Image (cartoon, rainbow, N blue to C red; front, side, top):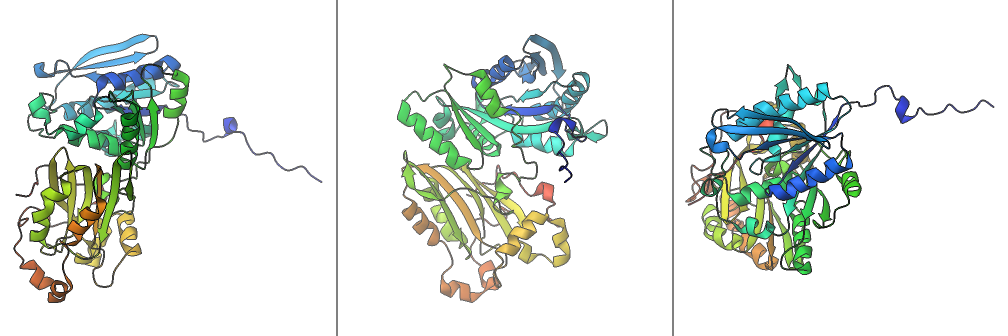
Amino acid sequence: MPSSPQAPTAAATADADTRPSLTVLSGFWPAATFAVAATLLAADPSLLLVRHDLTRLRDGVVRRVVRSGAGTVEDEQVGLRHGCVSCTLREDVLPTLARLARSNPGHDLVLMLPEVVEPEAVAAACTHCLVDGAPITDLIHVDSYVTVVDAEHLLDALASTDDLTALGIQAADDDHRGLADVVVRQIEYADTLVLWGQSREGAFDTSRLTVLLKRMAPWAVHFGVDGDLVEATALTRQLRHTHRHRPETPGILARGLQGYALGTHEPGADCGVVSTVFRARRPFHPQRLHDVLEDVNAEMIRSRGHLWLASQPDTVVAWEFAGGGLAMGSLGHWLVSLPQDRWEHVCDQRRLAAALEWDPYYGDRHQHLVFIGIDVDPVELHRALAGCLLTDAELADGEEAWRGYQDPFAGCFPLGTEELTPTDTDTDTEGERPA
């Protein structure tokens, strides 16, 4: 009997991926983020770490530093482009990564982002911006987006009402993002989260932070690291060559619309942390919803999602709460409000998610909100939100009657003449705050 053919080994595979691997590190606390980066360098001296120092930002200068385990490889100043940190990094990071990949074959890369930069912006640049006419992913495999959070300061940051301008660390003159907004977006975009150190309040509070992070980003892989005792090889195994990044995953505001998990329904408190999901097929009455906005978010650390207002039945309304402020904005049209020949402008995942839960009367319109807080009452929360839904009698009046409701949100969520493309689905809602 002839012997069975042997499967080729991985080393002999002709199409093996030889691109260097890129790990993107973000975090609002540079000391903790750099400690993780330094640990990775200690485990692999051939690794190249790219970081941008914003110390001289007020002088219009950003400092780019490239290091290996052996020391500094490059230390150069980059002029601030258009007075904007994000523009400068976008126009410098990708060419730098491409140049290093070409000149240092076989050397993996770590990109450490400045504390005010959100990883989703970097991911978008990697997807849509070209370097020498080609995507950066032709040269580099983006392996994972890791966010490092400092256990000692996390809760204070999530509760902060300060904005970056007040703190003097804004990325541009018109950058009015809140500190809490930046921190939650860094956490929620990550595929890997590292809780660095211990809470100054003790072991129970450290456990509480662990639970909180898992509720905020249930899709991520979570690790806790004692900042006083770090095993470099073990941390490297957890953070590098994980293949966790999925570029097709939408940003946080579009997750629910595209059928991805938006949060977990864990109404029972774990270390005091409660996460509850509110879903409904009826529309909200605009005035009743407006009246409870402050109450439903009063004890929350984070809430997010999208909703349907009876008075604006064509519009998907985004909802984001962090740091004491609620932002709302337009995510475009509900599919049911569009002619079918315009559905081709909407991504396949959005259409599939809508089809799976299509209602013969409401179409794809629905409420999907997630609330995360400490020692909150999920029953009272659901009761308050359910009281804002239209009653049977109001439903019977029909859509034309709903459009005539007194609406405190009128004019807040304009719809463009063209439906959103797949790359525009996740709208920045900052600044659209109801009165």
